[in-house]
Amino acid sequence: MKLNFEIEIDAGIDVVWRAFTNPYNMSRWVQNFASFTPRTGEPGQVGATAEIAFDEKDKRVVMLETITERRDPDFLAMSYETDHGTTVIVNHFEAIDAERTRWTSWCRMTFTGFMRFMGLFVGGVIRKRTEGDMHRFKLMVESDLAGGNA
Image (cartoon, rainbow, N blue to C red; front, side, top):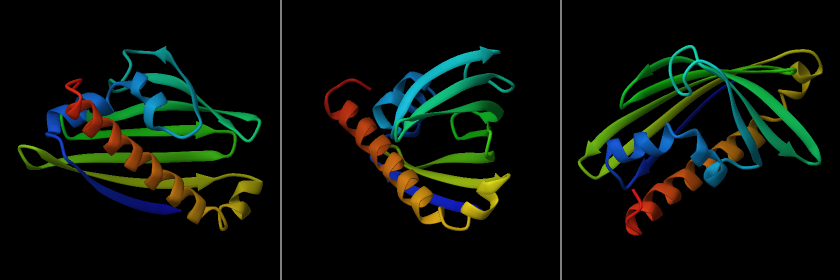
């Protein structure tokens, strides 16, 4: 399954990049986020791995994140491994002007086992959730700027 997303953020690309690449911000904008635990390498750098956990309907879901490519301040790609498959996410940040940034995210999910069948039905849920996460990220960055915290 392939999905594409885009949102404009009222903040400069450097502010957006700093907020996005700080894994400890995830609790502020990622739905059901439970924890981020670095495993190998320097967090956020190519080759680094981390365990990311989510609390989903009384069940803990754990993913292994691997940073696969990074070009500051506009490109970050990673893969996520779970018992149900692999997700590759490519994030691109583009300066629209000095105070606005376009964030585009491309996702490719490959499911295994029973999720291959269920994957046919969850696209809308994944789309809605990702759009919500991106909107919460936008609000976080813009609110931090307004409050002088960026």
